[in-house]
Amino acid sequence: MEDDIIVETTHGKVRGYSRRGVIKFKGIPYATPPIGNLRFKAPAPVEPWSDVRDATKYSPVAPQPPSALEALFGEQMPQSEAECLTLNIWTPRLDNGKRSVMFWIHGGGFITGNGASLDGSRLVLRGNVVVVSINYRLGYLGFLYMPEVPDTNANVGLLDMIAALKWVKENISLFGGNPNNVTIFGESAGGFAVSSLLAMPAAKRLFHRAIPQSGAAHKLGFNPIAGIKVYENLLKDLGLKKGDIEALRKVPTEKFIVPQDTILRIQEGVLRLGPVVDKMTLPDHPLDAIRKGFAKDIDIFIGSNLDESKLWLMWTPQANELTEEKLLQNVNNLMTYSKKDEKKSKELIEIYRKLRKTPRNIMDAISTDYMFRIPAIQLAKAQCEYQPNTYMYLFAWKSPMEGGKYGAVHALELPFVFGLLGNQDIGFFPRKTDETQNLSEKMMDAWISFAHNGNPNHNNIPELPSYDKEKRSTIIFDKEITIEEDPYSNERMAWDSIL
Image (cartoon, rainbow, N blue to C red; front, side):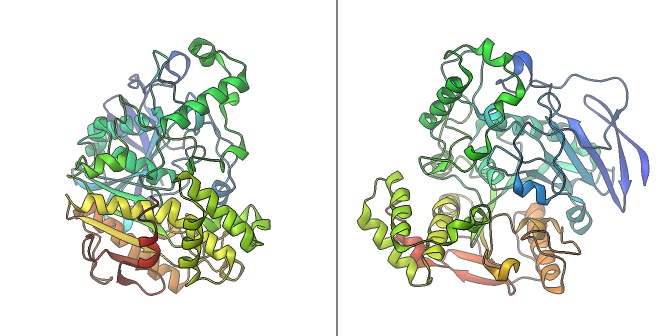
């Protein structure tokens, strides 16, 4: 390991290190600490420093509750509101290589997660790319919506991402990257964030390609009315008056950590706490903006996992016992968000019953499509009207955990995309075998190829045509990789009058 690798950035010198052919820089600040009068405001430029800053260790992460999913990736990280706006870089060389940049945005429901949980080294070694990951403000500190309160900004967590992208534009050439070839990719909340950035005026020309994984511009999301409710409820809990921003800025950080039970709460059928439509930062719903051609210059590779919703069964095992009566009740609840009646619920259940036997599997497939697959399809359909480099994937490889009962669960594609297959199973994440390694390499090459040239095709997968609204060609990542036109078409069409 070589410890004395120094780069002079626009704000000061940073010291990284080299290990096994990858040069790493960790915890580089891209904004001023967002505390005091900067709490609930757009990130301010980082203050320059004079000494060489140590960048050999990850910084603390944004304040957040414990996360069972994050725990699978390792120990919980130290937290700090002041020190969380940082980024990490993995690069093969510090030269003028002008390598494709892959900019990772972590998931976690906009409430948990961090940029340190997935190491970018294997993507670097396999694809000769530069990987960047970031931390951004989470929960109330990142997404509190107070439109009537002066001296605040909406969507500051998204504005943090834009600040980090600006840092990359100014500095990444010093780390061997090409600021004119940046791919943003993210999973779950990170996918929703990628979809949001596609529609943000301030993000224009900061990235060139996008891979939203298991997160798209849900039609019923981004609701400012829901955002205001969250704000009012928080003030009630804190015993503060509406508009008293000075008092809100003095509240201890720990009071803003969203309670664990809030993470799974639903508002208007989608995540409660996250980006909202706001005239200054996100003036249009992302799906509407994309339908108008706002992101027509961006290549997109979008997809979801076949059994996303089975993740939540792991923490609510009693939900496995689902009766027909409860199934109808649950689907009715979903349909109310789209103002549909029980007749539509019954129609939907019968369409899904054709391929599934149990109420539990029917419910999981419906909720997966509602939250993830259908929004991804809608985004791809909107984008392909303007951009021929629009591609669709479906990850269908099933985790062997507990006899395969969780299927291709939410987040399961992550170790395949990053090449992080270990010597043993970790929860539902699989160990390295010939089968998993083969699939991982082909997926990594698809992501890398897309980052290089806006097309995920390479020699070791079947040829994937670009997405169009007639054929709807989709690559299925499974034990065997196949191309299908309009997979699960009957189920897709069933949503046409709902979402």
